[in-house]
Length: 546
Image 1 (cartoon, helix red, strand yellow):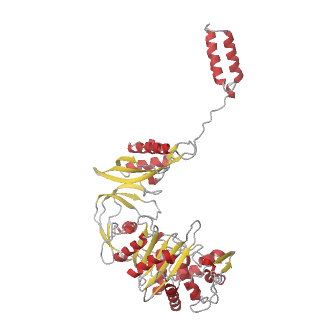
Image 2 (cartoon, one colour; image 1 turned 180 degrees about the vertical axis):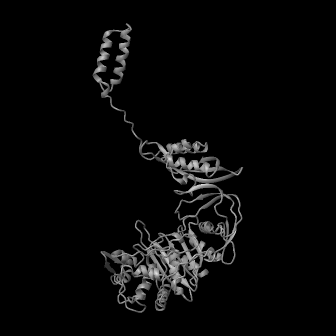
Image 3 (cartoon, helix red, strand yellow; image 1 turned 30 degrees about the vertical axis):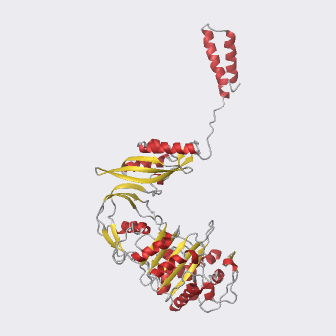
């Protein structure tokens, strides 16, 4: 009766109406009326719509992308936003695209989908100052399944509008906020993103900070205005009318820069920095990939055994280790509830400290943890090597972190794990400090340009400590883990390798830091494996060129 209740009620009413008109039998009327009364409207079950689940089909991906791009092209913002999983954010972004970026017209053409991702080409017209300027670029979108409705929709992200947009960023067109710059190297040679692609983010950062001070005048541009607090500088996407560039002299050496770029290019991901120990001037900085995050200055990675340079300085200062002195290197050492071991569980029986350093024996350093205060390593890194101070390099930089730690984390910190974080800029500075005997804060632009104060370490390295560190790094570079990369070097040089384990990675991050004469450099190769094999050749090529 429930499945036919609604039809029965309607039939009864119709039959009753016919009966009143004298056109039908009373038996039909009576039967229909009875059926309707017995079922009752309250017994009717609501219709439950089945929500579609699972990934969108190829047909849904194609149709959703087509409809979204067509609505966007036609300027139908509400319709386009309604085809996404975040109507509010999409509406705001597409409205700003028209009103703030002044995109008067945009023709969007979808490419061949790859799975649920659809690339597309944007042929836009920027309407500003009475002019129509063409602008073409590539982007992509991903189609997903809406969990509530089951419909195939665009997975909304700022990068749909432009691939370089991040959360909180804004696309704008108008008079540039800062004038353009003509950056030149230490000898006056121009440094352009065209000639040095890996410098693009750095040049953008220098323009943002020094554009007005360099004496230029702004032009009209379309640019990405980064979110407040972003580590990335604003980025020009299209120049509508050129401004006048002011000249900005940097500390970069164009020839060494080219060498650094070629060295990191051999790796899918790598970063290197070279500095002048006697002054702190940054002579080269390169990242792979060339476009993107400035890992060399802003990366934050556990430095692995390259940290043993700082730890060794601490142990020597404390009288807990010394070149030529006996030092334990057991297979294992337990501390703070953790059992630490060496690579391949090696040990050095009856060995001396320099052997432990050159072979990168972990337990030789962790075994000294019980004799150290929790903040000893933090103080040594800050007060001698300048790590964690507020560096004023000329662009945004992460200046290293050696937090106060206890128990097992304290032991791990001694070998560059735990909470210790560094980047190539920091580790190049560590070798530079050993080479010169005192910390000179790295910088890209002379502090005299804007009267900024460079960071200063509390004290210089003790002469005896410095001499022992140089001997330790020289031995490592000639007969230890860095010997292969540094082969053929002569004069005053030294190095230290490192491999930092990271949860979830099949290979550790490879590190290498070294100096030769008045040049120091460091590199990291994420998931590169042993530092001597991955990061070592990068650093060595830069040192040889310098």
